Amino acid sequence: DLSLRVPVEGDTEVAELAAAFNRMAERLEAEDRARRQLLADVAHELGHPLSVLRGRLELMQDGIQAPTPEALVTLQDEVVRMSRLIGDLRDLSLADAGALSLRLRPVRLEEVVDPLLANLEPVAAGRRIALERDIAPGLPVLEVDPDRIRQVLVNLLSNALRYTPEGGRVTLRAWQQGSEVRIEVADTGPGIDPADLPHVFERFYRADPARTRSAGGGTGLGLAIARSLVQLHGGRIWAENRPEGGSRFTVALPLPHA
Ligand code: ADP
Image 1 (cartoon, rainbow, N blue to C red):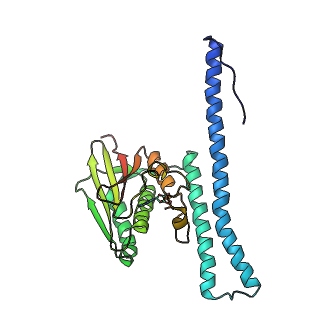
Image 2: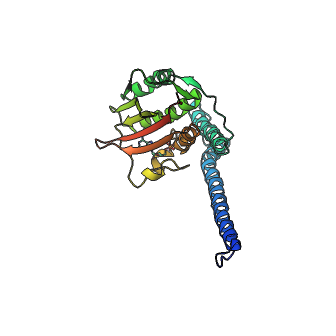
Image 3: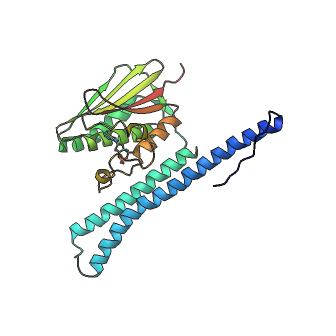
């Protein structure tokens, strides 16, 4: 506890100054707590794949496990996981520090969405998931960084595909609403527990740690990154459960001033 507090007495200018100082101290303390928590989370998240790697390497060194191609693939999975985590962390810290600069240019949404859906189609087909697209015709041109918007949509779509059981449906819809373009990714998966809904955009938040931390699961940073990137564009992002089941993530991007 830093106890950076000054007693506030009376309503003089000095008291006002003391109150302002106390507010600032509170903010600094909250930031400090968040930074420590992040560091602890990162250590934990990197620790897990590292201990798996270490254990398997020891088994191989002791001759208990042969370094077969299959055994090496599981080692590689952990290395890939760690690289992904580091890449995600870098994006997130750049975005938070305001150091991630957007390369804004006029972009038609289809330009971003169509190649992306084509890439994900085999993944969807492999899980017998229908991947559908419904972009309103004549949508205004956006002023965005297409690589970053692609990254947001990849995160939303790959979550949707990951959490939706075989035979389900994932739909990307886009339309204009007032001075915004809205892009929605809806799925027919299990949806999100109402208790988890307010937290899914937090770093390392996972509604079901046991299921999602297994190999192939995400880093728990995807939605935090998506939110940072959308906010950098001056937009908003939120999650809901659909009344008919499954979840729905919506991105609202401001249209450039005419
Ligand atoms: P992860 O890498 O674990 O997917 P994210 O930040 O992308 O991390 O998502 C955070 C959590 O939100 C997930 O662990 C999962 O519990 C929940 N979540 C995200 N997308 C969906 C979805 N389409 N359906 C159900 N739950 C989801």
